[in-house]
Image 1 (cartoon, chains in turn purple, yellow):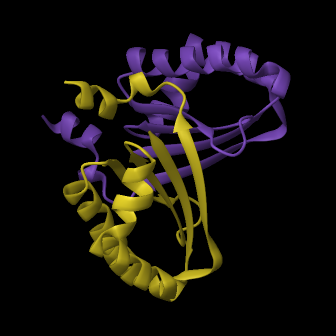
Image 2 (cartoon, each protein chain N blue to C red):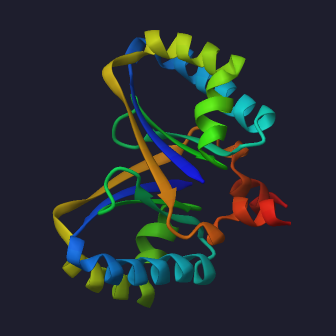
Length: 110
Length: 110
């Protein structure tokens, strides 16, 4: 499994456009990609222009090849290029320490 | 709902102890607290001493009162005080932008 934590600093005048684009990207990723099992979008409590994404993929291929080859990812990148502050996009890759406890893993086994 | 993103920089000589303590805290939180609906533990891919927690609570009371009053939280804090680097604990509070899409919300409704 591969988890991606994303921090996004959005331009204040682009928040509405950002929200439409990230909602579409998250929904399509979960709907169309068997390898994307989680895609949560959060707004930071004390900074309404900062957003955090929590994405889980079944493996590296599901993210680096499958996710990045989708039309919804391409559409998102286009909007993101105009909505995110310069230097305001930070990706942190991680792996679950106790993957057997994740509900998404249990669903995959059943 | 309330989401807590936690970044923890663990002392290299305390990793094993940290792992035992955080596994116990995560498991007990999900098992014993109806208001704690998610508690995932991740290890950062390019920094094996850095860990990220992803916790979701039903509301502020579930975190600030209920979670922090539990014996497993007290036990965790005791170990954390000795395992985490000085200044290496960063909490970021957030709220889900599309809470209706979270599986935990759907379970709560059913």
